[in-house]
Length: 220
Image (cartoon, rainbow, N blue to C red; front, top):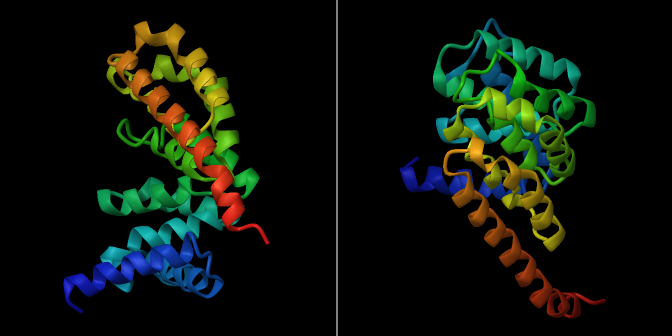
């Protein structure tokens, strides 16, 4: 297929497995991810999946992973040397949604199996998942001082942007309370905190302004 058609396929499939939660498409995505991982073969089968779809199908695979799937995926990740493959596997690990598996995904942030440039990705993915967002934030609050010690100041400066997934004044206040006392340890942290607070409060104001009309439009 030509590049435009392949890009369209990726976007349509992404909408179907994400917003649409289409069971048939998600099942197919998991099947493709299993082929990619070589679950029933001798090893990784990169050619089994269009490169444009590999990240997407691995994300779906990770979302539905049980403890056994997670263990197998973590083993493959630890032994992967190709950066693209590692990226796809890390996306799957961070996408975990089952509560016990998601808890393990968050703990990967402090795990030595991750490289320095990979360390925060599981937390980012957990924060972006609607089912795992609050637990991920609670984990961040609990482990903030460990993270501050582990991360160089430049990377620590990114942390306030993690809160931009939220959309209420209460969340803005909680974000400010968590990060403002630690700004001295965060290169560029004040700028990132100010940006995050503005984004959260803009979202909150927009939601407050538009919610009544949306509710009226969809009222039975």
